[in-house]
Image (cartoon, rainbow, N blue to C red; front, side, top):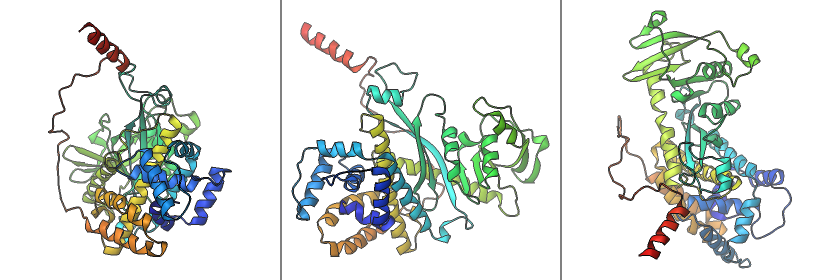
Length: 441
């Protein structure tokens, strides 16, 4: 494999396990220049690097083969792109999940809340090239005219509060039945374990979701949906801005079958905690075990998932994908998530060595260090790889996020974009107009 990624990947998933996953998902393949594990490593390095061009990935492959004394390969990107198309999507997803699971197993007890695993849930969107195939699989916003928008994919992810790793994810279109965030979360419920705590915004605060989580022994801390109106006369006061309230089962939604609806409880007792404009509902109903301040602290941790998605989309440049077919779009997303988890794994290892929390370290700095040490690790003899990895971890641990309590930033931009007019017709039509104007000039 490419040594820069494989050195870290080998610490998280054994070589035997990787070969087993390749045999399970990769099928039969010839021993080419780009076998599955080499292609996977190059693909992940590609999305981690600042220059995400396929030419750069092929150049790195040539550089390493030269270093190892192997036969030189062509700089033609065609074979590498074909190898990426052959790469099985389940293989990339499985490796990314196993890296996250291994990272979670390394989490120290002090990183958890009362010894319990806390997970964050949220969704985000990414755009991609405007091709016919992408439009069919990931339609653009229905309010945009054809040719003026870009296909959009929705990614719903479950992220560990302790390590920041993406434990599970689901990708879907943003339009059509079953594309809502709460529906994608429903597909991930089986990955939650009894005793865990899940934190999310008001998109997930529904009667049926809280009932389903309660049946699985998972506690929830969600912001209350803005459309819900509770009757204060039936509330049981626990303290200042702290009440127990009862929800009655609503009518059966069209997407739910009758058997599932009948199995739902007729009432739910939840705890409502208020703080300014916030109304938080939770299944942590006993004030003797969990105080109001602890619930508010838990919900404030939800903002970490916003920062995590920003790291993936902005720092790792996943906000605009490059692939032109739906199959490759899904692989590109999976490769980004795997690269993100590998960087997070290095941050976890660096934090353990310095008695820090992983979230006290800068992801952007860790990604830069990871990219900067690629060449060092690639060209160092195998006996010195451990020393280079130790230097990488030391560099990651040196960049710490300053403590900024109660930081508030407006969701607004100061820098004005250039005053170019908006494209109101498809690009090929605009080109024809320019050519006609030039002809008549």
